[in-house]
Image (cartoon, rainbow, N blue to C red):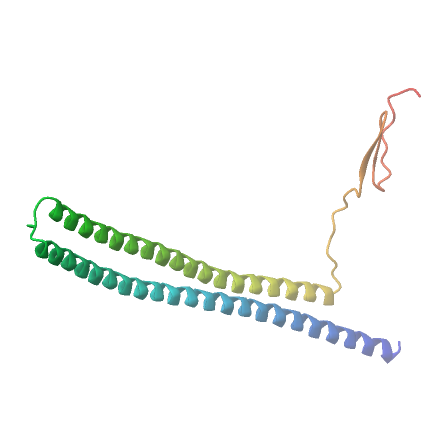
Amino acid sequence: MSALPMVLMGVGTAVQVAGTAVQVAGQLQKGQAEADTAKYNSRVAQLQATQVRRASEFEIQKLKREKSQHLARQRVVTAKSGLELSGSPLEVLIDSATQFELDIAAERYNTMSQISNLQFESDYQKRLAKAAKTSSYLAAGGTLLTGLAGMYGMKSVKTPTPSTSTYTGMGSLSYGTSGYKPKSIWPF
């Protein structure tokens, strides 16, 4: 036997090993890149939650100052007009104070809702990062096993299945290329 076929077989095996190694490395790098992206998105969601919290704290302080200033102006106007802080003027002050408190409560509720959504997004992205890494390990492992099987001449076993199934009527039934045809029950 000539040495050339043996050399070519060795080169072919080396090329197959290199190809498998490149595929495995590519799948692992892809999984790492997806995991890094998901971790980044998680961090962005956490930072956004922090920004929403700080903006809300500022907005609530602003509403409290406005409430205080508005109520002070109403008391001054009431005093300058010679009215006492009872009856309708007092009801107006109470209504204004209540409305400001409702605005503050609404701001707190909206903020907590936004923060909750951002925390959920952050947690979801963390789970995506783990799943991307796991998926890449499994894909790389499958590629490695397939490459090894190919190097040792093992072929994947395929279960024969009919390629088509057609009913042509009156008892004739054919399944793809298997050649199976039941006998017709009709006399013609």
